[in-house]
Length: 613
Ligand code: FAD
Image 1 (cartoon, rainbow, N blue to C red):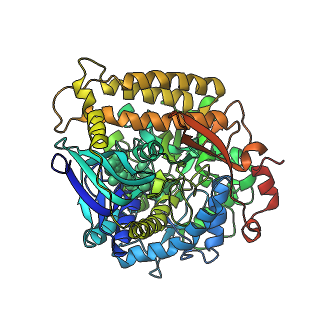
Image 2: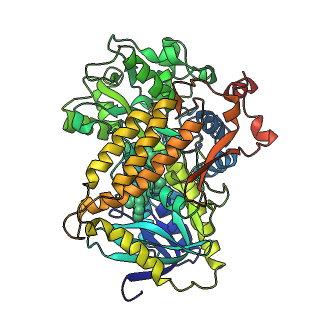
């Protein structure tokens, strides 16, 4: 088999080269493991590069009151208390070290007047907490990690898509896939595998994600027997572009609101004051005057006692408010609302603090955001659910498999706070890399590959070329996205979700009968045909969990169950393939929270979130 297909042997295989994958590979290599890093696109072009607003870390550079306990509290409240509390604690405690480490590796952050790393406000964070580089933080993060990574002796394989994990008994022992450019099949043998493949946004029609986000890592893990968890929790970011249609869904960073932007309906009303939920009453202003005092103070980097503007509540709250304004007829001509930074900041400030946003609107919509408001609406952005991992080691529920970054679940609960992803990648990427390297050391040698298994995978991959006739895979992808958008999008109900499951079954049949023309050299139609398996797996997982969770919480809104429910307040929904290959769903109790952590929260708010009131 080694002669027939290109084969590589490593201690640790990292799949995905965004922030999580790069950080994992750097750590694995530092621990002495021979490490491979594989990515679907070119190195450096991962999703992380698109991150704009910043990295959340309680460094207290701008407001001395900030600390890891406040960050933990904000993360748990933002996630509506179904987060894994231990992951939230590790994340809050370790994020400042990871940001400092990134700086020591060469990242150049914006500075405060005193020369410290500057931190900006973001939704759901009590204090200015996001270390940033203008609105191009992800670019600086990837540049730095790449520089560090390529000098760490990591073997990098680009434009290579992995489609199945290999197993040796119960243990994951590698993966098989193909080079996108040549179409050649390639095998990676490894003693441990780290998944860092990002999210699932391409399952929806309107999304802020790039073509790579087809849920491959979640599907690879599931088909290898691992648990997925929390798949019903999908973040619809409040501010995506809506006009012209060709750019709909493209993200407008929350930094626009962090830098003073306000939301206005078609009647000119600043409507977010009408939508402050109980859990945020203490934190967010209920009078415009108070909010404006806060804004004036923070813009001068001066700690303030006044409460924050309501535009900076967590994303689930803001997205639902926007949707409600539109539904009740107060939306704009193109079906959105306005986001106005022009009347709040000088043109010079906007160009300095939000340069990408300025160019994005100028080039894509011919709109000058220093002069007029932007027209915006919600867009599918992030998945909180994913591979179930151990909070300390990032081990999945199958031996030899680890996951970090957006592909993994637990930290964010039902809703992620902005900025908490980039810190997640660094904190848990490092832990995953270290754990995978340690596991690899415990495996004395790799077993030989089984030819029949490899041939089965190879035959499945090339099947779309060998069918006499069949459907164009793009048509199936398009119909899947429309089905998910209309039945399992921002608002869901039982009828829509049940209908969605029926449609997904039909789409599965169609996906198994796609026909691809041409040859295997850079053939995007073939790539789409193969990605359908992942898209369908994550879509089904999402819909099954959404149907089971009969309440509304964070990134899961049921119009037929609009409130929190006590029966779902202390459980995660986990999925695993049963003996027949069907998805088996179970309720899994949340890990018990120690008293010293529980004490950080207002008992009245906890009661509400637990549906006890
Ligand atoms: P990614 O960076 O997406 O990397 C995934 C990698 O996996 C890629 O290399 C891809 O090629 C590879 N891959 C996928 N499938 C396969 C496969 N089958 N085989 C081989 N390789 C594969 N978060 C913040 O915290 N702050 C922000 O300011 C912020 N801004 C954002 C702005 C935008 C526009 C978007 C879309 C997201 C933003 N986010 C932000 C979210 C954040 O960027 C992502 O959640 C995060 O970058 C995900 O990182 P990752 O390492 O998990 O995955």
